[in-house]
Length: 166
Image (tube, rainbow, N blue to C red; front, side, top):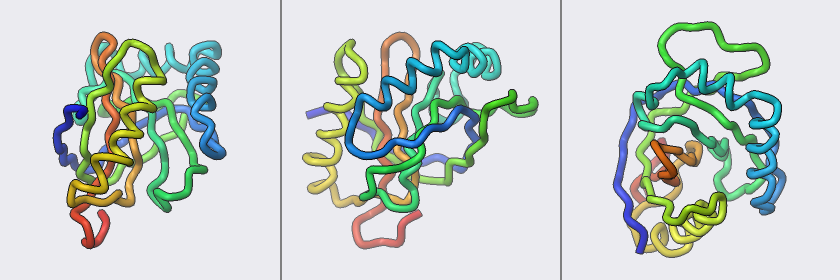
């Protein structure tokens, strides 16, 4: 069993670089992160956000899977992002996205190897935890939240089963 907690957050803004993920190939995420490292996007995001963790997620960097239209469709826009601090002009080449007010199940990712530990955590969240939790996937993005050090969490948007999604 993987430790998790339930988190409810108001809407908040993120800025970042976006790509299209087409299908189940989890290597696409790693390649996009590497591209963002090589082209300087990660440095720009770190400078823009400063040295403080995000106000809402407590993350220093985010991976935002834009599945809010149809969580069952595994083709979607994906962002490497940071929470937008108050004020400031968005740097050229970056986009803004408003994360809706949502409730998430935040799962700890165990292991030093990324992205394998994230994939394992997602599999657990979807295949073991969600079916027996009393929740279902909300119409909101899934997120990888990169915390201090090597800590990471997978955030699954949830609503009570058989209710109207947020």
